[in-house]
Image (cartoon, rainbow, N blue to C red; front, side, top):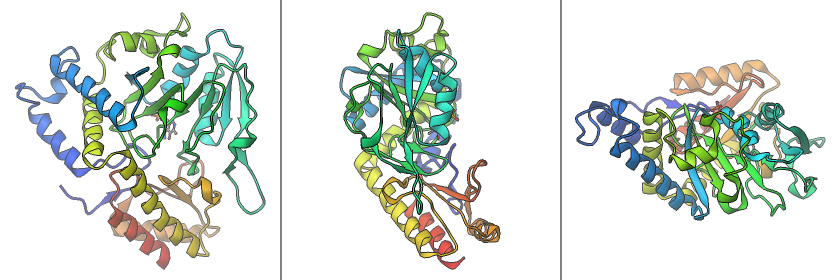
Length: 356
Ligand code: PMP
């Protein structure tokens, strides 16, 4: 398979070559079944084993305690913005959302259909730099149903991974950092992620929910958004996305075989260090995130001179580095470097940044 091209897209994102090769084989015939993985029944024993092994791999990789359930649900992360509120608000009067940027605002916006939202100021602006996150300054109402956080903001490239101990249930959107950051799941009540970045392909989300929160669901919640039903039916509530679950299992297996989460997190740090060094050394380029909150996964930068960005994108394309355009709301360049991103591709990009 040709890997001359490297894809830095934010998601769907680059998959490891070995995973793509395995998929090709299994599209022809899956595990001696005589049929393709694309034809496999969601009620088959083979699919049951895909789900159970995905759950146990994820539990092992993150040392997820036994009082947490792991479920797979159709739809990406956005459907979880509704599902979180529908499953967790219970009798509470409001829910709190930490405002750290684009995705946290969108998650609050969707949840506001079901519950009053209290924003917690997450970003602290200062003269020189923006986007510092200071957890000790968060003001969270103890009566809140939950506090929702987005530890890696994919659009602006802002992250905060170490959560302090909170006295309210914390819900985290891990869409752009799952399997890439060493996260203590036991600090959270619920975590969820659309899997299309570092854990598979589009169309599926994974939810890890603590047992005591499973039964709070509002009665009018559609079945396909109910955590309790997914727990009861072990993620097979209807004809679920068999292929997407299968790719997720392959990705989990790939991460486990390649050293696990700590190694993935270490590699992410190394990739990001190289790129930020190149950006900081080039006076034509700016990254406005304060150093401790720079995402090691989504590196976003811009230039006051639009031509510089255009030249860099064109030079990158000539070298087979694609998917680097910034998010449509912010422009500039964004290099999304998930687990399948080779250091060689980052080195090529850093060299282009030096030269622009
Ligand atoms: N949350 C975060 C942090 C994201 O990065 C994204 C997608 N880029 C979403 C939510 C939305 O995901 P989806 O498109 O799967 O709904």
